[in-house]
Image 1 (spheres, rainbow, N blue to C red):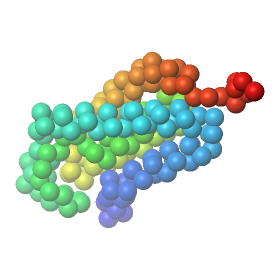
Image 2: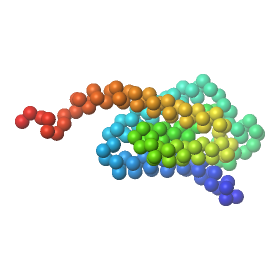
Image 3: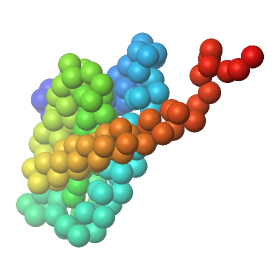
Image 4: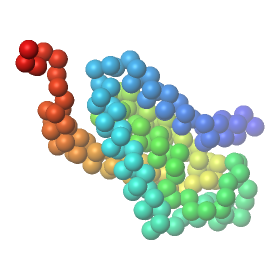
Length: 166
């Protein structure tokens, strides 16, 4: 009974811990706020767009549908690919990993726990979880490349204190 409760809690709510850690990191690392915000603003929508497109191309029925069973968490019998909860936590983990590897690894641990819990709850297959992790990592990699190419140009347009003619 207790293990089932943990699985349900992690599968449904642990994603909020990733969001909270992203917010805390944003607050306590003022020198990285702009980088974290810009990288997140590039990576998160890109991960979502890739997930939506791949979700149209790849159909993976939810395990409870295939097994003709009842999942631990009520859910519609729609496409399981990719896992939205895992995608969110993995995207947060990948972005933070670029700036802070230790915290990024902790966040990837949370993402993996969320994915495994969603498998245990019969909501997703391993393909759904692996797909979400891969999408998040690829989207963040593309965002990093875009960020490194575009940021110097944007940064040059921003007036800096002490550089104005007086």
